[in-house]
Structures are given as structure tokens and as C-alpha cells.
Length: 52
Image (cartoon, rainbow, N blue to C red; front, side, top):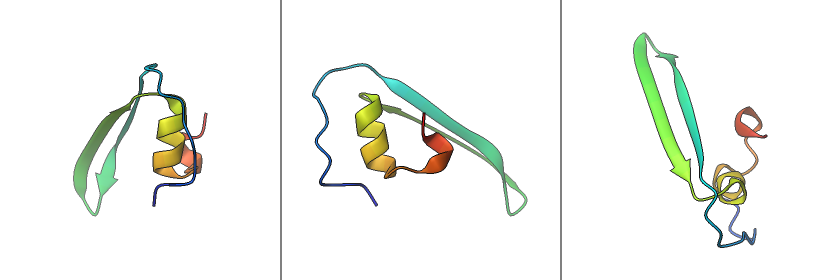
């Protein structure tokens, strides 16, 4: 769940992340653009796969 206690700046420096793969035999594709890296980290709550 998102980290609701994290304060992020209100500047626009977009970060787009994607995930592609196979889940239970079906191909999946996911793409999302966040307003900045802080917003991405807060939303994904530090998910190691997208930590950079």
C-alpha cells in the first residue's frame, strides 16, 4: 500500500515504469507514469524491483 506519510515535492519530472512478463500462462504488460521519482517511491512503498 502507498506510504501516505511521505511528503513529496510538487514538481513535474515524470518517471515511467513498465513491467512485462507471463503470469499463470498469460502475457501481461503494465505501464504507469508518475509525476516524479518521490511520488513513484511513495506509491510503490519502496518496492525493491522499482527502486532506483
